[in-house]
Length: 165
Image (cartoon, rainbow, N blue to C red; front, side, top):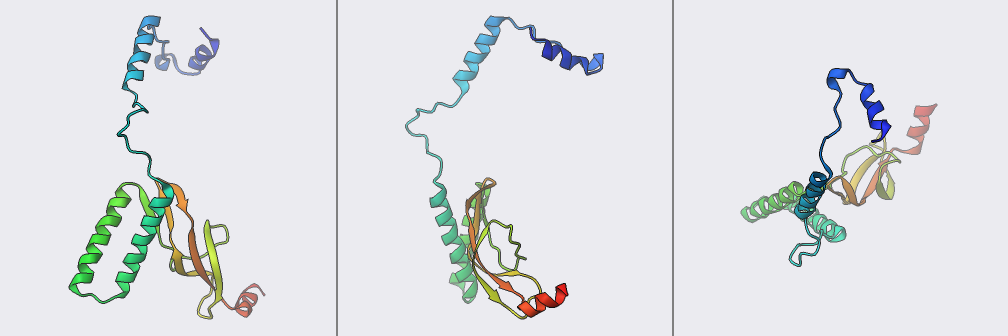
């Protein structure tokens, strides 16, 4: 028996110390065999592979573009029905862990993990702001699978100089 676990237990009040397990070696071997039998097998031919990140990002981007295009059109019955189908699809993907992030109107900081395609002067702005999202950022279970592309609006240069003076 190693002394390290014993010393770790001495840090605690005697009422909270955990005694070492008194299992015999055969019991530990049986437990290991049972756990190995319960582990999912990797050689199942019908098991689906993990989804391809690039294919998911492409599908989610096209869904995002379709929603934006539909939002710009009129509100006839066909558009509303198609919008419901797209929202249902987006919600199903979100439940599966796929998050599509649109950056329109967000304040821009140089440390963000988005790709800037263009910086554009805009006299109505007082801070750098994302004017348009060209391609959304996409996350799969908190993992970044597609970097967003944006157009950033900047206040005029003389406005920036006046603030710092």
